[in-house]
Image 1 (cartoon, rainbow over the protein chains, first blue to last red):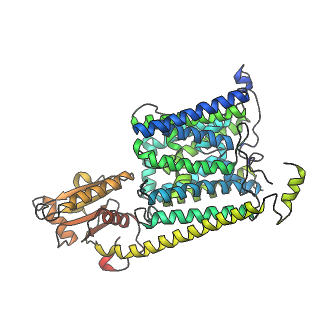
Image 2 (image 1 turned 60 degrees about the vertical axis):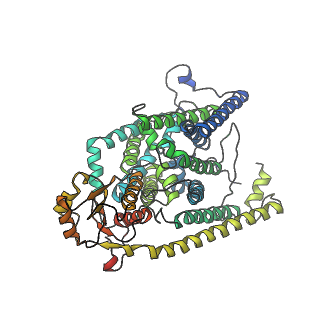
Image 3 (image 1 turned 180 degrees about the vertical axis):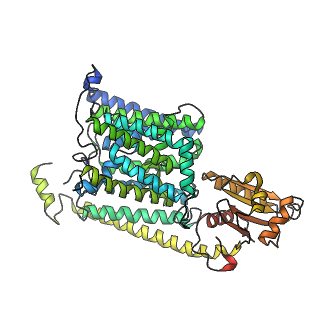
Length: 394
Length: 187
């Protein structure tokens, strides 16, 4: 049986990274020691209690910010646990002809889509058509696709890898923040407005099928069920060359497919409770990176700041329990490229109005046209960049 | 995983130590997913074809281009909006009291999607009323226009429900392919 846990690890954008230890002392020299099994169990029990409390609080008072925080805590924990890094998952198709990463992404999208279809038909979520900007979506996808290969991760990927003590990812996070500042500055806004005005007489609808139509929810449900069934069958019968399997333990890496399904399920809950905290979309990551720049300014930023904090906390706890927190660096050239990659990722996310999580994991699940345009451009750009940069034109 | 089970996995067509019950359960679940999925798509297709009769019949192309100075003047402070509903009344809204609330609800729903949207209500005593009526060749009142800032005006007739107004927004905002005849064409 092929284990899916090491996708992209052997030859990923992390290729060339070393365990180069800085000259500092203490935890800066060795990283943070893995806790004992008992401590790990205690940490997980505390997390479970916090989540339960946030659910009860949400039900009894309709104050759902703690619950939203819990969702992002689980999100951060889960993606770290399976190293669910979109850059590696997508690149592995070109690097090693490995489609398991793309399959995991599809499972996350289809799981979310199934829930959105059912919830929409029950009236628990309302999908509004969103504003379409075709050219910004394409340019954003281009920037994002190149940047994610250079930096070794998307927004969430660099965030959780940074919590593992990877210097390239820490620099990539800095690059993302600088990119966001640049794209939200006056010249950045001018550029985006200019891109938005470019038109080829092609005005696609916001969603492939009008989201207010009765057929929308049935369409989502139908596509999701057939897609998930096809993947299950393809994996079981070895058509895809691997089985859907994996571990789900305290200390080890989790199955990529289980985490993909968890991400989809988290999207359901986030979408249902979102309107109670003034947001009407499932999951996103670029806004939590943006919030790192302006914590505590107003209500919206406070919520995003909470989500950023809980996502990072979840990643740190997971990395700690796995014993993954240790300083890892890379040659100076790669560090600079990681920063530049982060810069492109940050700018791409702002130009396209969303990152991998918001556009692909959430937007594709709603058959949102802009998200589909962004995602397709991003994936192809990732493959081309991987071919030239990571495979060296071979 | 030991070497033996690894080899077992590598034999094409050979299943691992799955019990027959597990295999049957798997087939039943996958078949149920396929059938439910196909049935959902069938329902979606059915609803979609029914919805076609609801579509562009109540939408009329208007004569005025959006870049007309008169339209721009008429939109006044709302010109910065991405999308505007313009309601034209010849008298107080006694004849159709639900119209304005329906239009406002639709505008709010559109605004929730991140598009700046608003409602402009005009009466004959407003300076811009006559020019809009003339430019858009409006004969029946009350009249509702759906205006996209970056190009596109359409007049909505007969059906002023929130759903239909949102549908009109969708058509004005993007899709053009299903507008085949002049009487109900949308651009």
